[in-house]
Amino acid sequence: MRKPIRYACAVVTLVAATAVHGQTPAKLNPWASYVDVGARRSELKHSKDPRVRLALEQIKSCVALPVVAPPIGPMQIPQHYLSGGHGAINPAEAPVTAVYGRFETRVTAGMNQYLATGNHEEAACAQDQIDRWAVANTLLDYDPIADSQAWFQVEWTLSSVATSESVLLNDFKLDESVTSRDAAWINRVAHRMIGFPSESQHRNNHHDWRGLAAIAAGVVSNDPQLFNFGVAAYKNAVDQIDQRGAFPLEMARHERAVHYQAFALQPLIPLAAFAERQHVPLFNYKSPTGHTLADAIDFLGKAVADPSVIKAYTPDQQLIDSNSPDFFAAIEFYVHQFPHRKLPPAIQKGLSKPTYATRLGGSTTVLAGR
Picture (spheres, helix red, strand yellow):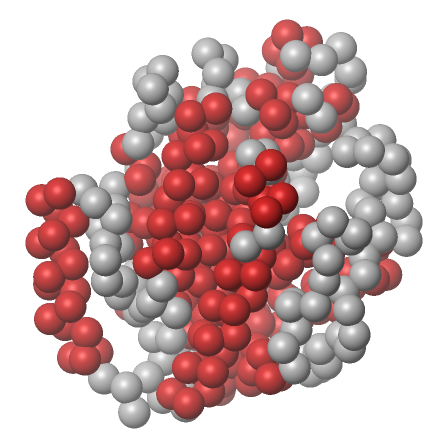
């Protein structure tokens, strides 16, 4: 059985080094998830907030959900849009990606139950579901050029499984041979995901999602290279923020510019939370022009409240899905980090009900909501 004492000395060294130099740690603490598991469980136990209590009631059970068998053969997924990067959505995609959604739902359900209650049976269920896909070497057989949508699916599903694993590792009753095997699989998937030459061509939300998947994988597998990739992806995104707070590459998405401003923020905020838990103050990072991620969050709130601000980038009428449970999901982590910072009214309204995104670990209100 694993004991927390095994990494105590390493953590002390890590804290001292990063506090003095502000550098990316050479050694990682695999038990430091993007949330402090023990502290969060205590917060949830004592929370009287109606929204948080509702989110707790809504958590599904991994044990009650059917096992999701890993898909067999090469990943071949139809493009999300019928043409290009916007417009009509391809109806052929959803039936093919449904299996990944069921997998993410079952894993995050068990993780959320474990986080909230300490239920080992739920944690073991989630770990077993991960292990089935790990043993089958899922998420490794695809061609990012011939089938880019498969590549995109890997970054999202890996984000889900790696963030979940970062919480599950705190259950020291889990079989260490299984968690080690699964962490090694997560590591292989992450390195393949970021290892294609064409990755260097992407600096939009896909690079951000790979950053989240990489940093989470780096933490659970104790891989500084993956961790550093995530930190670099975050800084690259913040460096792109313009004078209004927009991500220019997302503003190029025509009628879905606001949607993609939010979609780019989804991985970046929990990515920074992972770094903070390793004593790398990424939320404080400023671009050469003086911008922080807060500027992009504020711009999103302004654009949701008044889509006409997008006219500076595109004449297209905006399709804004701000009522979707995942639209503001990542901002839960930001609020938890900065509980006293005033957010735009549109975002405050969006956080008046529970949020949820399996790509970010399931119930983001349970994970970080206040």
